Image (cartoon, rainbow, N blue to C red):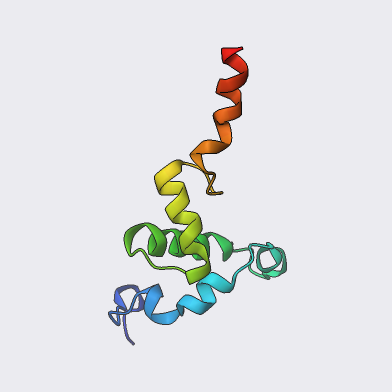
Length: 93
C-alpha cells in the first residue's frame, strides 16, 4: 500500500488550475455555501490571484490600467493633477 502522506507529483495548484479559472471567479461565495464538506475554496482562489498579480505581474489585460494607477497614484481612477486646482484657487481668495 503506497504512503499517501508522502505523495508528491511535483505539480502546484498553478499547474492544475488555469489562469482563466482563477480570474473567472466573481467571489460570490456560492462555492463556500454549497460545499458539502465545509471547506472554503474561495480563499485559495483569492490567494492564487494575489500571488499572480503581485509576484508574477500577471492578470487580465482589463485589470492592468487599474493596477498601474494604484501603483503610481494610489487611486484606482486616473485623476489628472489639474482636477484639484480649483481648491487652491478658492483657498487663495
